[in-house]
Length: 79
Image 1 (cartoon, one colour):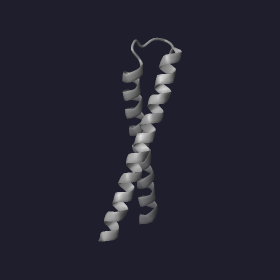
Image 2: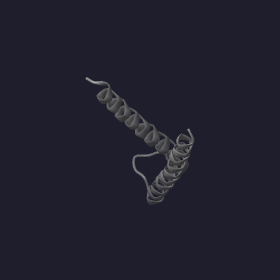
Image 3: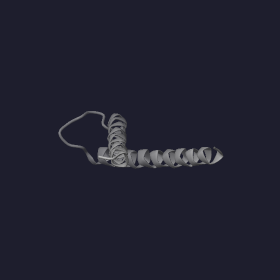
């Protein structure tokens, strides 16, 4: 295997790990916020709360990610 192939594989592994961490954090936060008494099923209000919480979490994450990437690009341009 050449260096570029290895680097691509590492990038993919990092992206997968980041996605898994994002999903885990989002699940933890939204579960704590929306589920008062865990049971066998979710009622309608819990389902709505989870859906809205996950949407807001993803929106916030996307905003932070875009801002961070934009800042990185500006910093690289200065070098």
